[in-house]
Amino acid sequence: MNEQPLIVILGATASGKTKLAVQLAHLLQAEIISADSRQVYRGMDIGTGKDLNEYMVDGQLIPYHLINVVDAGTKYHVNNFLTDFHKTYEALQSKGIPAILCGGTGMYIHSLLQNYQYTSIPVDETLRTELLTETRASLAEKLDTYPGELTVHADRSTVKRLIRAIEIAEYLQNDEIHTEPHPKVNAIVIGLVDDVAQRRAKIYQRLERRLEEGLLAEVEALIESGVSADMLEFYGLEYKLSVQFLQGKLDFDSFKAQLFTQICQYAKRQMTYFRKMERDGVHIHWFQADTAPETILKGILAAFQGTI
Image: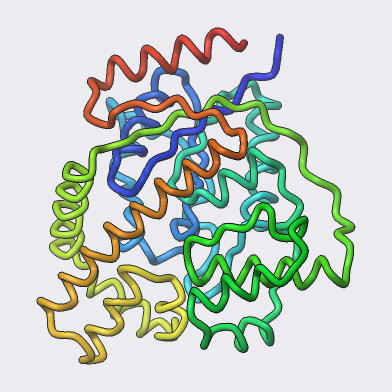
C-alpha cells in the first residue's frame, strides 16, 4: 500500500481550521499535528487560541501533537518544528495512522513542503541587534545589496522576516549549509478563506471571547511565573499589547482597538504568505470558510482516497 499522504489544513486566523481538522480526523481516525508557532508553549492557551475543547468529538478525544511541548519563555524556531514534525509523522506512518497538519504559520508549512535547508541557518544576535533600529524600507534596500541567488526566496512582508532574510544571505555569503534535508512529504493542501468583512467579524468575536476567558489574567500569570515582558513582547500580538496594557502604556479601549487592528493585519499577512506559497509551487485547494462542512469534507475525502 502507498504511503498515506499528509493532509494539510491552513488558513488565516479565525478561519475555522481546527474545527475542520478535528471533524476530518474523526472521520479518518487520524491524528492532528499542529503547525502553529505559539501553541507549542505551555501556559499560553488563551492568547494562542489552542481551544483544546474543540478536540473532543462524540466523547472521543482526537489526539494532537506539537501543542504544549516547550515552556513559555523559551524560543522555538522553524528548525525545531521540522525536527519534531518528522519524528511525529514518521511514528504515525509506521502505525498506519493518517496525519493532519493544521495551522496558520505559513513559514512552518512552506518550509516543510518545500524542504528548505535555510531553516538550519543559525540566529546571529549581533546582526539582529544592529538591524532592529532600521526601517522596513532600509532593510529591503540592504537585502537588495546581496546577490540575487541568496535572496530569491526571501519573504519581505515584515521587518522580522526581512531581518531573517538578511541573516540568511549574510550567512550564505561566508558559509555552506552542511545539514541533510528532511525527507520529502507527499501532501494534500486544503485552504480556508473568508472575504475580508467576514474575517474581520470573526476576529472581533474571537477577541471578545478571549478577553472574557481571561487573556489579561493569563499574561499576568506568565509574568508572575518568570516569563520576561521582553519575551512576551517577542511572542507578539495578544501578548505584546497585553504587556503594554498591564504596564500602563495603553488604556483598555486603546489596547483592544489596537489589538483588533493588528490581528486583522496579521491575518492579511497570512493570506499574502499563502499566495506566495502558491507562486512557489504549492498547490492549495481553496474552500470558502462558510461552505457547509459536509461539502468541504466530501471534497477532502475524495482527494485523499484518490491518493492511497
